[in-house]
Amino acid sequence: MSQSGVGVSQNCINAYQSLKLGKKIKYIIFTLNSDNTEIVVEKESESTNYDEFLADLPEAEPRWAVYDFEFEKEGAGKRNKITFFSWSPDDSKIKQKMLFASSKDALRRSLVGIAAEIQGTDYSEVAYESVLDKVSRGA
Image 1 (cartoon, rainbow, N blue to C red):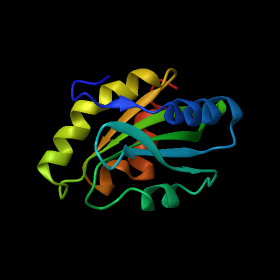
Image 2: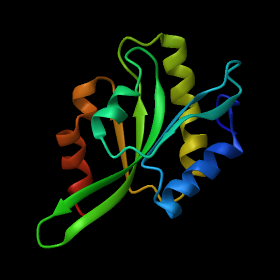
Image 3: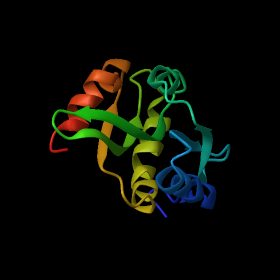
Image 4: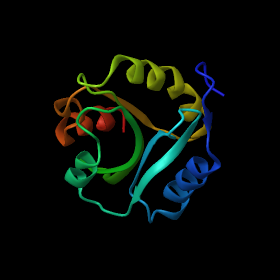
């Protein structure tokens, strides 16, 4: 349970385990249910296209996401880092931003094995190169 009293749906944990262990799902988008009492899975995708992932983040509404970020590390080959995104665009309603911010920790704590965390308020902060720079440090 989060500070906001919002719980995490079991579907969120199941989807995350599937992404982490099954390697079929590439990313998951999470949101709040209609009465703002529970965090639920909005979308799961097998697409490896990062632009499709970005297109699934609404322009004016907060979301959380987990993305299995794959990148090349010189001398080390391909690497993967499961990356948690807090998406809170500047154009979101204040009340919604506050609810998402106060509910984040409940979701974040239930997803064991996150390697990196990205906060985004506009698309430049979640652009591929920007995220690549953050996840490849210390990889």
